[in-house]
Image 1 (cartoon, one colour):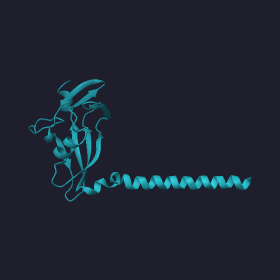
Image 2: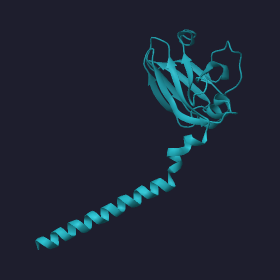
Image 3: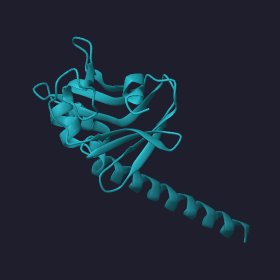
Length: 166
């Protein structure tokens, strides 16, 4: 009886090991681009929104399905994560606004205490550099050091953006 119980436990462990090994192999061969996608590109950029105001801001984004997140005063928040860019591509025009769901949304609203204080409406386009607008290519900063592979795309929400509507 004791021996039979131990044999069942050992068989269960062996089956568990096979299942884990199968899952690991499937993940490796079917999802390897999740882990190695960045290797195919010359540069990797993270996208951040910087809040340069003394207010806690809520950002609403999206065309069909609305998403939102908060940014504390004088802080930055990850807006998209990272994506790869080839050397000949413009990270803002070619990849962020044309290639990601948050960048290609048609509207970004900034709220303070549930009140809309800024309402940027797309699509993304070339505007005068003096016009500070989420969908203005010229309002974004591309931060990357010479020879570096990783960089940052950053849009800054300034007090002037908020004060225009307050």
